[in-house]
Image 1 (cartoon, rainbow, N blue to C red):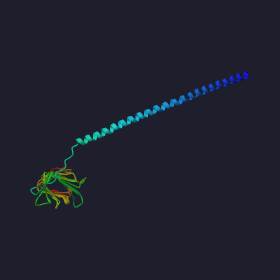
Image 2: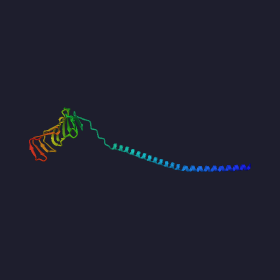
Image 3: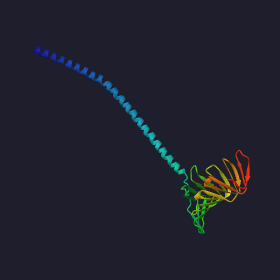
Image 4: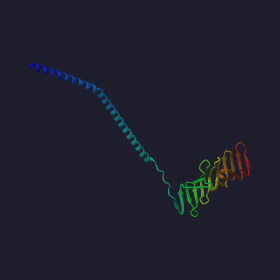
Amino acid sequence: MAAMIQKMGQTITKADRDMNAESGTAQRQRELNWEPRRRMTLEAARKRRTVIRILRLSFLVLSAVIIAVVALYILINALRKEAPAPPPPENVDGEVRMINPRFTGRDSAGRPYVVIADTATRRRDEPDTTDLVNPRLDTAPGADSSQVTAKGGVYRANKKTLTLFDSVHFTTPNGYEYVTEHAKFYIDTDHIVGDKPVSGTGPMGSVRADAYEIINGGEKVIFSGKVVTKIKGRSDKKGASNE
């Protein structure tokens, strides 16, 4: 009996050793299997930290750009000088005076025109008549426009006429420029007449005359009085009148 018990004890001890050996082998195998996963987990953590750093840096840069744009906008608005609004019309001794006036309308052909000046004073007894300082008239804006300027003028809104005097200068769509001391512009028909000497230059040459008439924006020009013309490529010609 004692020998049997001793033999059984030896068998159990061997089984324990075998079990312990198997447990140690399994643990080592688990450790070997964990090492690659551990390396992968560390790499993922490093990549995640890199992404977070990039996002933080991008956020800081974006915030700095927004702050700089807002500050620049505030600075520009603070330095920008607002254009003063034109003063309201003044009433002096019953006359209405305006600064930088602008009169607009259309002629009989439907073409727009605009009359502007430095100042305008409406006459007390003639509400449709306005005295202008440094007036300018633009007709039919674009390629077919005519422009007339002078140091003084009188605009009659009811008759659509603009009488100009003192250093009158006007241009026509066909490329001619004229200088005179008097011009009466019939805006509705695009017709100009003048009873003072005039000189003009253009693509065909130059001309001087005692009086003139410009019809339909320069399509036809009539000179009268003592007329002197110089046509390019030809000798000078003189006559009583010329067209």
